[in-house]
Structure formats: structure tokens, C-alpha cells
Length: 627
Image (cartoon, rainbow, N blue to C red; front, side):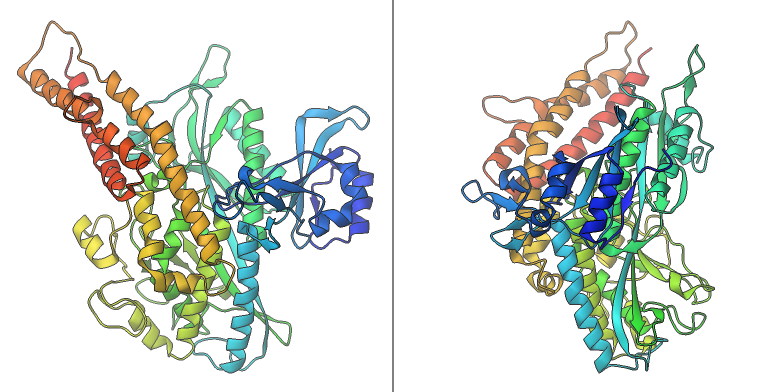
């Protein structure tokens, strides 16, 4: 296995690619990976001989097409105009996905599929998520290079006075996931207690989980991803041992981090990482879920996204554009301040791409270390870097290493469409940098630190954007909403920001690729999935819970039992029982969704969630009091 081919490096010539494939006959297939607007990646099995024979057509995009109805491009690829071409992208790494359950008889090696990132082209235009990020970065790079030529001396930046010839966009993600034994359910209450008592954080892994985690790290490094750490996360429960000595009732939360890369490559890497982790854990008899909130009441899965920006000058040196020239005097350079303020100012229209599903918004609740407020933390002084985990955007600094200065966007989850998030984020960053190059770092620090209601020269007047406090514990919900803005609670509310803030949408679409057509298609797709999931998955699950919350027969019933059951009975009826004259909340929500009355549906969803939580607490108390 040592001589398997895992990666074909970016910009490898066609002749060399064919040579490598001929030297590895175990690679039987190629698959073109296009990313639609929901973040789904395509997968096919094309015989490798066809790819080698028609490689020029694959590069040109004429060899492979897909039906537009099979990918999420609503309003773009329609049933009567569905043809989508799929050219390959030679500028990034190509990975080989090996099937260790299927061996080639001739070579006695696992059968491989060469996964080739590509684009989706409709009517001659690139309309996929990868293309949006790729094209956005081209335009941001051009704008920044021209900006630095016009402003050669920027406050607090060590690149001042040097000719900037190129811009480097770097990103990395940290992937959290839950792993469990198939078909087994663990006690949420018990796991919640384990989280509160921090019994799982950094706990030693055991058995199949340990094997799968170690195998994943080893395998990912074969792809050149340079894994930095794999460890237990906050969620989980101690497993049990059966009679044969095997661990059962496994339910744990893990995290794997790997090295940063160019922004497009970093997004591609994450898809590969998710695929490999799932396959390796499955081979060890374990299920993996990357859902943002797989179990209500327990820690969700985050995907903290690191965002960096650097410049290459004419002398060939690399400079971190966010880092201050004097790190003990200033938190950041003027570019860094502007970039951070751009992210925060336009987050209302970045957030729809970050949190586009019911699942993603279920994670963003107070009390689970997931950010709910548009706010940052810098630290109490420049020589004391902040590690405030309660805010949306962290400023990551290492006083001994200026190149480490970057932003950590903590709102993303493993199924966030990171291509669109990075495209919107770097466009917002560009707007902030354009503002900041004309200001001193002291003025920018004051602007970022201003109080809500205080007039500023860039940030919104009615908001605060910086806090060194614990935003969960030190503020009430009312205070948080007043200071940092009320966060959306439903997909509809989040998508409405794309309609309510046209000036902000104009900024994140200013680089041309994330245009009105793409944004509209993304919004339509997100709302369709929101509606479909509510009707076909969430409401049936809630209805089943309501049905199970039945009266318990007991010989010993107190007045408290009768009181609780009466409240439970009324709640069940309000949620799920129709009469001729009055419809239940479940029915009202279905009707509103079917009629397209999304604002009303959003309000009903919030009301239903609140009442279901009330029902769960009441029934839990009722059940525990029955003896």
C-alpha cells in the first residue's frame, strides 16, 4: 500500500497525469466534483480509459454534462434548459478515493477513483460554488494590489513602502463530528451532565473510536493534508463493554484539524476530509454525523473557519496583512482592523450562507459555546491575545509569530457551504480594507470599540461590535439583542436579510461572481429545503413525540401528577389535534408553508419549538414523579 497514488498535484501537465494513471492501474475511475449552491458535491464513475483518451475534452468541459435538475441551481438550470457542462479545474490538487472493500485482482490493490474538482457551466457561465469563490478571489486580488499601489504607506503594516505584486488568501477549518454505535440511542440527560462536568473534553479515546481516529489521521496525511491534531470534544458518554470485550453504546464527539491552504484548496480539502473520516469510521463499525445539531440539548458540531490574508512584495517576501508591525503596541495593522470591521458590518448578509438550514440554526443557541451575537474580542491589551470563546469572530494572534495572525469565524458548521461563505467574507473584507487605508490604527480601534448608539465613521450607529466579556453570562438576552443585534431564529428570518439589506448585499456581490442571480438561486434553494424538511421530516418527528407523551397508569397519583398531566394534555392538543373549528399548530404550519406564507410559517415554527420544549420538560417531570 505504500506506493499508492493519493494526490495529483495542482497544475500537473496532462502528459504527466496520464503517465501517473498508467503507472497505477488500480485507479479504475475518475469523478468530476462540482459543488452546487447547496454545497453538494457531484460524484460519478467514469472509466479512467475514457478520461485518458478524451482528456482535452474533460479540460474544455465538453466531455461530461449533468442534468440541471440533479443539482441545486434553482432559477438557473431549469427543466426546459437543464444542460450543465463540467470542466475540470487543474489549478488545485486532485485526490484519489480508494475503496478498501473492493480490490483489483491484477494489482491486489484497492480500486481507486480520481476525484477531480471542477466547475458547473450553464449557458456559457460558471454557476457553481467553487467558481463563485475562485472568481471572487481573482477580483479581490486585483482590487487589493491596485489599492496598495495607490496607498503605499498604510499605518501599522510592515509592507509599507514595498511594492505589492500578489495577494495570498489562506484558510483552514476545524471539523467537529459525533460518532456512535449504529442503531443505539444514548441518554441525552446523561450526556448533558457529562458535558457540564467536562468529563469528555480531552478524554483518552478507546477501542474502535481510537483506532478509527488514528487511522483517519494517518490516512489524511497520506493526502498531504498535514493533520495538526485529533482529539475528543466536549460531547459524549463513557462506552460500555460487552461479554466479548468490545465497546458498545459508543457516543462521542471528536475534532480533527489540519494545516491551512489557499482558500479554494482549503474548501476542497474539507470535502475530502469528510469523505475519508466517514469511510474509516464506518469500516470500524461506527456511524459519523457532521450535522450541526444532531441531538437537541447537547453540544453541536462546529466548523471554525480561519481566514487569513497576506501579500507578496517585489523582493519575494511574504507579509501577513492583518498583523501589526509592533504586535505589543497594536492589536492589528490598519488592514486588519478594516478587514475585521468589514466582516462584522456585513455579517447580516454573510450569515445566510453560514446558516442555511434548520439544523444549523438549532446549533446557534446560548449555552453551548456556539456564537449567537455579531461581536468580536481583541483582548484587554495588545500584549495579551484574546481567547474569548463566546464571540462570533476571534482575532487569533501569536506574539512570537506575526504570520499566525488571522480571524476565526466561529458560526460555521460542517455542512456550511464554505465556498460561498469565503467569497462573501473576502468581499466584505475588501470593503473594510478600502475604508481603513485612510485611517490611523488608533482611530480604527476606537471605531471598532465604540458603544451602541455612538456615531461612527464606518460601523452602524445602533450596534456595538466588540466585547471582552462573556456574552452568554454577562448579558441578558434583551441586552445582547440591543447591543449586538437580534440573531435570526429560522431559515426564513436569515434569508430575509438578503432582501432587507440591499446595500450590504451590494457590497458582498461587488466582486462580480456572487451576483444577484447566484444569491437568488441560493435563497430559493434554501427556502425550498426549509419548507420540505419541516413538512416531511421535522413535523412527523415532533408528531411522533407528541403521540408518545401518553398518560401513565398508576395506582398512586398525586395532585401534582394530575396538574402536570392536564397541562400536558392541553399542550398535546394545541400542537397536534385538529377540530372542525380550530386547527393545531402543526396543521397551521403546513398550510402556511404550502401557501407560501413564509413569514407566518416562521412565527409558527418558533412557537411550535417553544411549546415542544415545554412539553418535553413537563412530561419529563410527570414521568419521573410516577412510581
